[in-house]
Length: 209
Image (cartoon, rainbow, N blue to C red; front, top):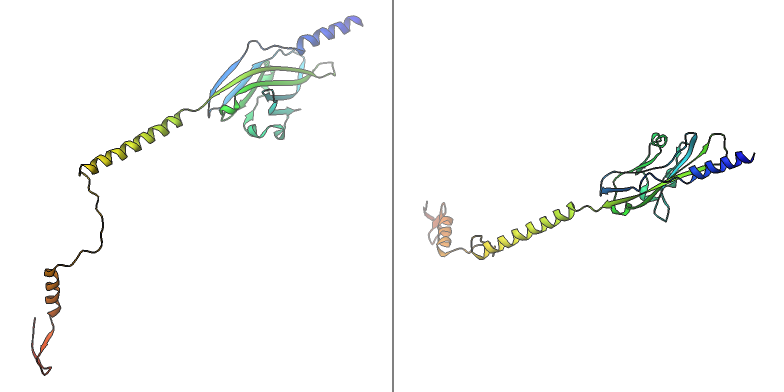
């Protein structure tokens, strides 16, 4: 009986405190899909029943699965509908979670925890591993904005120089053009076309064409 107890105690100490094969650091660029994973020591007769992923000391939950069911309400708002896992990875001793469209705020220390039981034992066993994720901020949008601003300023300066040199003239509308005396006389003559000229007795004398 004592030997059996010692054997179970030793087995529990070996599998309950696993260490990753090597420290992991994963890098990703902003906007990409990141695969966060780490290795854990899994005994052959271990049957997982729950899987959780948390991040940083605040233990924000990004994924939670229990008895084959994913609990979407357990995830913090920042990670809702952005994570997925593959249970087949557990059989290879890998805790893995995919995070879509990562941002610099997703950077941090991620810890994966799988809970299960050893065959013939009722007590749950918890195995875990951790990995650091670093998300680099996107730089292209900033550079593009600077280039657009520089190009706009260059166009404004070029137009100003051309206007100053008289190459480009700015036309201003100052009202309707004034009618010259010649135009007034022509208008008067045009007004006589087809009109009748009368004498003092208001009798038509002749017609001007």
